[in-house]
Length: 362
Image 1 (tube, one colour):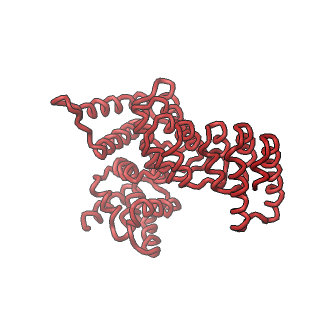
Image 2 (cartoon, rainbow, N blue to C red; image 1 turned 180 degrees about the horizontal axis):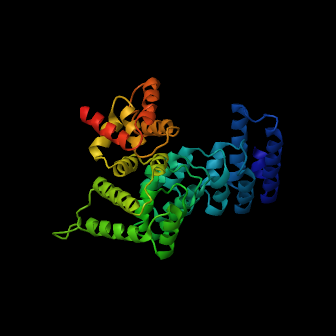
Image 3 (cartoon, rainbow, N blue to C red; image 1 turned 90 degrees about the horizontal axis):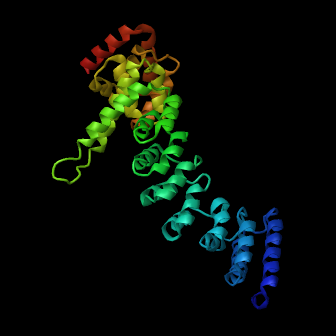
């Protein structure tokens, strides 16, 4: 160790790279996995890196970026170094864990935070930390990262942020996890070209969509009035209003089909599924809620049969509904199988009549 400290910059660089090459060779035979070896490697590298020149640290960062054997302490030191040195480490190092990435979001520069948001396959904890900090440049980098584990809730937060952060809008319009309900919200803030892209992507009626959004925006603006102090609109009420208008416009345009129900469930949009089922079947929201919360699945089967959901598709519909609805409607598999029999006995209008009668009885 003392010999390494006494060497000049050129010797220190050669020594660091030689040790790195040696470790890369030893990794293939599993010789670096023990705690003792990792501790020794950490001591050696940290001693050499502390006084190493920038160019040496940069070359070492490139060498260690993909190394699974690299000591975590060293990787974290390099990740906090100046951005050109830290970038390959943040982007690729398998040694960085969620807590390390969150620490970078809290302690490091904006440039470091952007690299964290760009890192492939970041998990929900890191995504949530990015959303919590609400830094525009970092949020934009996250929106551009299509490999990030972004939940439906996180997408909704990104779309909401796009109202005040224009740079979010283009990547969100292209994002694979954008669904129709969120596209309706995003549509209100984007320019003409992105609106055309959204309409084409989701096969929506542009004129009807513009009218619905215009009415919604005007009504939302009514939430800001009076004494000059903004009155925040109720988020839940706004969401329901937007969904109702979206469903109405799709229905009027002839685009609200049974297939839309399955798509809404696969997007995780349970309330949109309920609104669409009620509209297609001409049921009240309360009637649909009874079916969704009943102890047995027959009611939901009747409702789905009445709007044209194929018998072979119903098991998938029921499974997705239960996943999104805390296991409801309940009942064992036998009852679900019995519910499928309703498709044969009550097609079309007969199923709708049977559904209404059964709900009234409940």
